[in-house]
Amino acid sequence: MTLKTMLRVLALTTVIAVTTTAASAQENIRLRIASGHPTVNTYVNLMQNFFVPEVTKRVAERTKHKVEFVEGYGGAMVKVADTLEGVQSGIIDIGAYCFCFEPSNLPLHAFQVMLPFGTMDPVVSLKVARAVYDKVPYMSKVFEDKFRQKLLALIADNGYNLGTTMEWNNIADLKGVKLAGAGLNLKWLEFVGAVPVQGSLVEAYTGMQTGVYNGWIMFPSAWVNFKLYEQGKYYTEIGFGAITWHGLTINSNRWAKLPKDVQAIIQEVALEYEAKTGTVNAENYPKQIAELKEKGTIVRTLPEQVRLDWANSLAKWPAEKAQELDKAGLPGTQVLEIALKAAEENGHKWPVRYNLK
Image 1 (cartoon, one colour):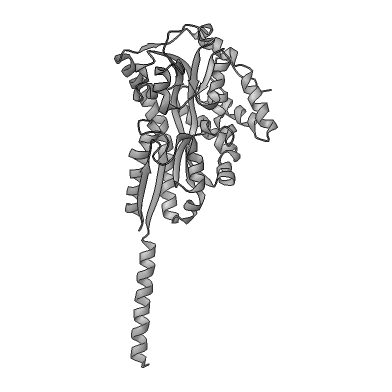
Image 2 (cartoon, one colour):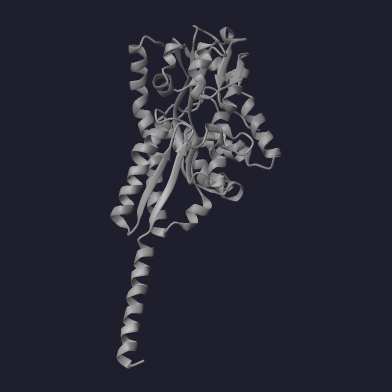
C-alpha cells in the first residue's frame, strides 16, 4: 500500500469515527411517563402540561439530544396502586403516585397524615416535607436502596376536608357513618367512630352513588373535577391539612443511562414541578370552593370547637404511630418532631399540640 493510499484510508477511518461519535452523542431518548390518576388531578395535569413539555424543550435547546415522552395517564400504563412497582420493574421509566397506596413499602412517607389538622397551605406543606427529607436521608434513599428508583420531586395535595351525602354538625353525627379515605387517613375517621372504607378517586363517584360509603376525606379539586358534588351535596371545610405524600420517581437503571446534561435538566424541571404542585393547588383552592357553591354544593365551615373536638380525639395517635415506626427500625419520632417544628416555624398553629414522648 502506497503512502498516499494509507493516508486516504486513515482519513476515511477518522471521518467514520467522528461521524459515529457525533451520531451517538446526538442521542434520541424515549421515556415512558405515567400515573394511575387521570389528568384532571392537578399533579397529573402538571406532568402533562409542564414537566413533559419543559423537559422536552430544554433538552432540545441546551443539549445535542432529543427527548420523546410516551405518556400514559389514568391507568393506561399503571394503576394507582401499582405505580411504584411499575417504575421499579421498568415497565415505565417515570411515575407519579401517592405513597398512601404503599403502606407496607413506605410506611413513614405518610408522616403528615400522622399529624392531622396541619397547615391547609400546600406551599407550606411542601416546606414542611422538604425540611424532613433534607434532614432525614432515609426518606429519599429508601427509593434507591429498596425500589430501584430515584425520587425526583415531592408532590403536594390541596387541603383535605370532608364531603358527604348528608349534613353533619358535630363528630357525634358521624358515628357509624361509612366514609372513604386513602390509606392512613382512614384513622382520622376511626377515632370519631365513623366506619372507614378504603377507596380511590377513580371509583369515588359510583361509591357514593351506590351507597358503598356516604362521603370522602377529599380536597376540593377532586370534588369539582370528578363531579363528586353530584353525589355529595355537602362539603365541609374541617381543615385536616394539605398533605405532601405523592412523589415523582424515575427508574434507577434508566436514570444511570441518561446523559449527564439530560439528568441535570430533568432534575431542574422536577424541582420546578414540585414547587408548582404547591402554588397551583394554593391558587386553585378558593376558585374550586367558589365553583362548588356555583354548582349547588352546600359548602360550610363548622365552629372551631368541632375541629378541636376532632383533633382531641386524635391527640394520642401521633405518639402511638411514632413509637410503632421506631420499633420497626424507622426514624418515626425524629420525622414527626421535625415536621411539627417546621410547621410552627412556617406560622402554623396546631389546634392540639401533639406530644410525641
